[in-house]
Image (cartoon, rainbow, N blue to C red; front, side):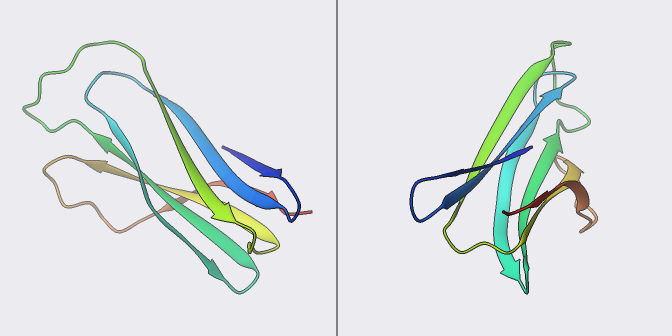
Length: 101
């Protein structure tokens, strides 16, 4: 993941890139929020369902989230792994942490 800022005033965005082991994966943005001095970005990687046909190819996925100008002193990117057709546990794991300068 990467945190990018541009312009005056600073406009922030987060970009996350990953490679899935087969076709059939989805990489989605669940949302973002600022809580205290930390801005959280929530992403989800959805694996193919049990009976879905997939191809054994590495698949690049990329998501960007525009955070705007009001971000906390820290930006944390969280990732949930889920499988299509199965209710996932509501668990996001920390993927990256950035200090905003």
